Length: 127
Image 1: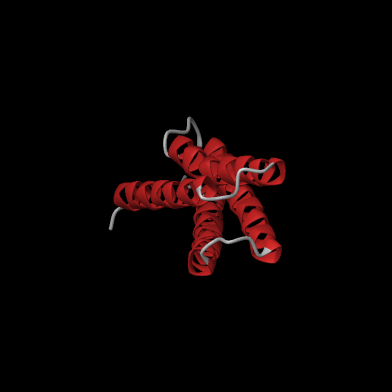
Image 2 (image 1 turned 90 degrees about the vertical axis):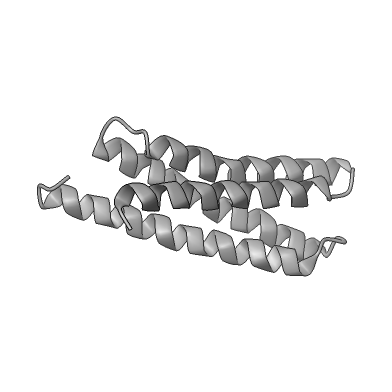
């Protein structure tokens, strides 16, 4: 798989993650507390996909690395909000929460690896 194919696949995976999170968010209760969590969860999850999309269109390798680091950070925040939902024990599908937390963890691992790989290329003068 080429880097370009990998990037497109990761964009698609990130986008699918956002769609699942938005669907979960839409199922939350309509209370002031749930609205805050819905907003924060949707914002952090959507930022993952948006920043990776931008990373693939970055102007420089350093810009790419910066945007990928944002993806990592936003995925971590998404895990935080998903964990809050678990702890609140609201009527949310626990299987879906588990699936989304695992996907966010996998995305973090991928973004970390991608960022390190690019840093290594730059250091070796190949980037």
